[in-house]
Amino acid sequence: MDWTAIKVVSSSEAVEAVSYILTSEGAVGVQIDDAKDFANLKPGRYGKHGEIIDPEKIPHRESGAAVTGYFPQNIFFPELVSTIQEKVNKLKEYQLDPGAGVVVSEAVNNKDWATVWQKYYHPLRVTNQLTIVPQWENYQQQATNEKLIILDPGMAFGTGTHPTTRLMLEALEIVVRGGESMIDVGTGSGVLSIAAKQLGVGKVEAYDVDEVAVRSAKKNIALNPAAADVKVGVNSLLDGIHTQADLIVANILAEIIIPLVPQAFENLKPGGQFLVSGIIKDKVALVEQELMKHHFVIDQKLRMKDWYGIIAHKSAEGEE
Ligand SMILES: C[S@@+](CC[C@H](N)C(=O)[O-])C[C@H]1O[C@@H](n2cnc3c(N)ncnc32)[C@H](O)[C@@H]1O
Image 1 (cartoon, rainbow, N blue to C red):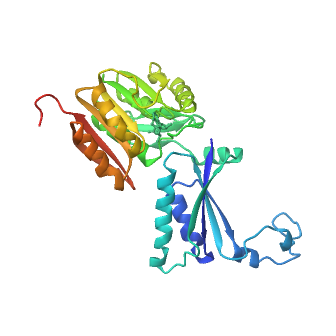
Image 2 (cartoon, protein in one colour; image 1 turned 90 degrees about the vertical axis):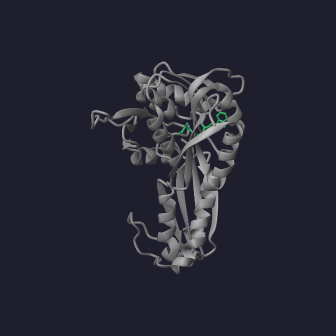
Image 3 (tube, helix red, strand yellow; image 1 turned 45 degrees about the vertical axis):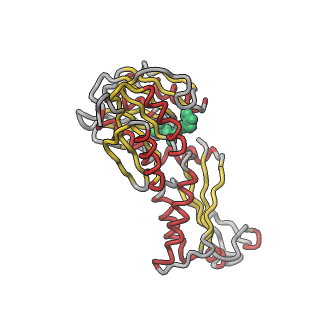
């Protein structure tokens, strides 16, 4: 698992509020580097492990504080950074000094964080029927209608916990009646394909432009016998695909959904449903316009936190 760190350079008094902002946006751990903590160190006093402290040898901030949140890497980083920046800017409204208020992200490749991840990633009932179960947990079904998705997210996006994935899982639960054919565009960890099979979808083809994601999806599909017949391959969007499916699902950024819209129309049966997610508020209207331009009818809009999903269907002949 690759990690991304988002560091907020702020003030000592805002440390707790900034830590809260980072964890509420999905950080699985935060690290605080506060100049005040350093100022309180007394030379020669015993440290936590019985060592004598020489403050001069400890790297430290001269002023203010920085809080770093660690996040599993995902493609929504630009949105995450701007959401965190907005929330940091608003600290003033709560009479807290945001200090420099600078938000920066950097990639981290640290094996230790993979184990932290395992510590925080537990079985989670994400919808009425679907529960995501990390591969390393021994989980027993709690309700008769509960369906399990066993996942080892590895390097690919799709732990099932991100709001954009949860919106798609909700949307699948709303539309699936059983026996449909489906294409999963940008499958990541394969989570939506596995969920679809568990909900009763018949034939599923899953694609991702990233080979690492395709490997991860194959690995996860092998962990879920109900999804054994899902076909996974490397492909960009629906380039070169000519089929007639009942359902197409895609949890990708709005900018990538736009060129997918006409391809989805071409590859859906009349009345077939197109489920999309990964859309921030500012881009909802753009995606809706594109859908309507290509003769989709918008049936439902779903929202979770700052994210939106849309359920649309390909208009059948004669349909207004
Ligand atoms: C946000 S993740 C979604 C993963 C999973 N479907 C979920 O809902 O959790 C988006 C995925 O789309 C893939 N992707 C990005 N651009 C793509 C493209 N042009 N064609 C196919 N897949 C793409 C990424 O590699 C990534 O795995």
